[in-house]
Image (cartoon, helix red, strand yellow):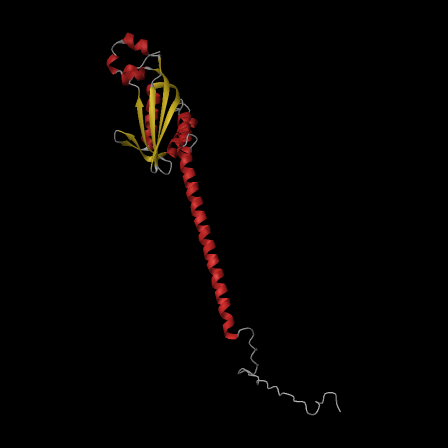
Length: 238
């Protein structure tokens, strides 16, 4: 008797296997694993949960970037208005470039002054009395330098006023200059017939106070300039 022959009288259950199902091309279907059709439900939920986490992470990153942008914008605005800010530095540089007036006798330096002037003021800058333009502002500087022998302008104090997107910097300075004949002809024409007085004044030095108000826009360009001089009638001739 074979060792694989079942013993008599012992019940051997018959195992029935489902017949294999085949696709149209003759290949058998793969057997299902796990929970069958229900297995995709937890997978979909896991994917949805992970997507929600990704969205929340991105939203937080956007929020952080917006907060950083606001901080940087506020810092930049404060720096522009601060004593060490770029606009005050620009005013100081303006007074340094024109510390001795327009360099009418030095073509190279004069051209540098014009280039600087046009880089810091708006093309339609308002210089008061209905007059506008960077060219006219440079013309004013030329006239001042012709009417007096400009020695030096020195800033003594400043005030910074800001509102919305505009900044006003008031620079109070002293302007030391020497009176020349052209000064009397244009400023005191009524004394030209008094030759003794004219000869007495020509060559004298004076040091009036001048307040220059620079109005800057949000782009850092000077849109307007106002100048207030100590009345020449009250000048103390040194």
